[in-house]
Length: 539
Image (cartoon, rainbow, N blue to C red):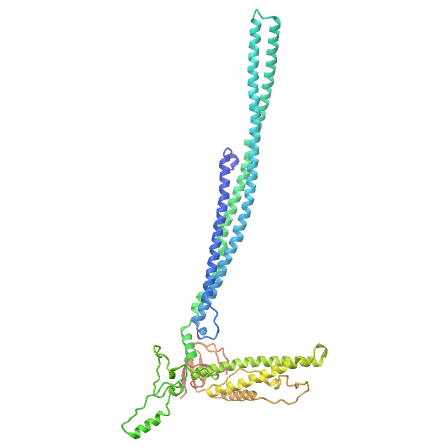
């Protein structure tokens, strides 16, 4: 079925229908544009929301950063940010694949429809022009035929008139004959125009207009197909990013399942354990007898337990909860922060000192590596003077040597404080045996001459002593066994990882710092949090 056959007489309907179809395309493009704006605003709001709750903190070492619930929340915020990116991608694809493409196609359709309508209008005008010619010839034929009839009647009347002369009769007959001839010519012209019009009319209704109507039908069907593709793209655009959105949602689910309340409790213990002993019973002070009072007074001079460690007044009790509604008195003011962290509880002091030692060792290793590089560069310059002047490196080598000496001094200072605090001093190692005190390679002195001897520094002796002690400890026999209640990653220096339910040999008991030294069957040793295991000591 086609429009040219079935709708040959419905030009106005076809024109209106095709115009309505183009308006539908425009309406759909506008709809998709507004959907795109919604997606863009949604993505923007999601990004702002993630940014609002994911403020960059001043330090990654804050206590809550190690909690699984805190890390999972950060993971959720990151996944939401990725999710927002996918919504932006949806908006971009909708704009490119539907709005821009359909708008361009719509302009082509409008131009093509305009061309077809102009062809129809020209055909209509041509047929109307032929019809006007036909009507004109018809009217002329009618007029001339009536004139011929009147002339014939006049000639007959004149011929019958007895008073008319022969000349009058002859003249009337000639006039009638002339009019009859003219009427015959008009009749032939009218017949020719009628034949021409009928032919053009047949061409118009059976060929020209059906062809134009069929072209408009093809145009409209193409528009419908293109619009249908736009409808499908509206769905496929979102389906295309669904796998990635699904991964974002899976990431949020995984963040929830990664929360481990037991590990979080262990982290809180590890971060905040003070190392103090619980206060002992107060002694009875009997003031009724002088000797007892003297004994009691003398006992007050050497208080036991955490009262001395916390700097509490002898006459004050150790309170577990602080009274926030009272202003701080001079005796209750916050302790002054000191370089050796003596203001902290024993356990926290050891951890801070150990952390500081690790930082110093990393910085020292960096300076040692730089010193080695400068030494090698100096050797290259001495052997190949065209590559550079060895003297140009003197200032850098000197500065690096000063930095190494300064860091070694700080390392020794913090190691002594850690030993005073009861720590084990398991600091990071660095390659000091390959360098002399000037920061250059031990095969050369600062001036480039060979040196067969190198003087070990104090920090090297400290490390050597620690390594010897560690080797002696490795030979110690187990004193019991322990079973892991929770998993422990063992990421820091000196620690060992373990899985929940794993059984390990206990080599050294907890010395009050919250750590127990254990050994695996394969010989691996390290420290684990005491609160993470149940320990059974050998009798």
